[in-house]
Length: 91
Image 1 (cartoon, rainbow, N blue to C red):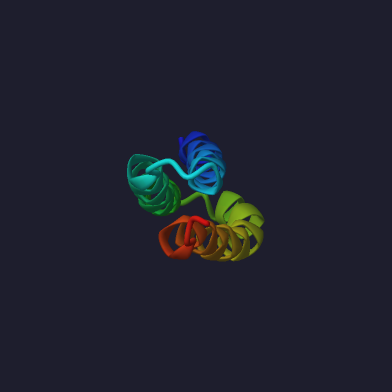
Image 2: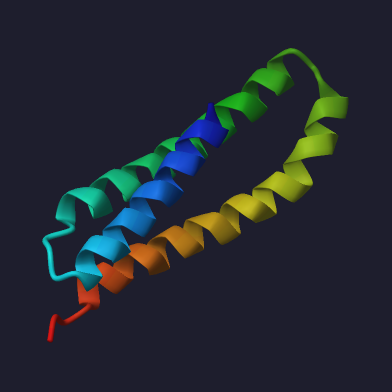
């Protein structure tokens, strides 16, 4: 589920920047993108917690190190992309 939320966050971030560059109000795209980013983090944490409850230590060792770094990078990217439309001044 976290993958679906993450892809949705990226799509809305791109729409956000695109609408902002065309001079349109992008507040809804920004809101949806940041909301999906937060849901991505929550869903990933829930997946990790479920693996702990099932004692799936192998699964945790496989996904947590690489995906947790990826989530940090993608969350930072989402914040930066959405900030572009927030601080972009139309000409």
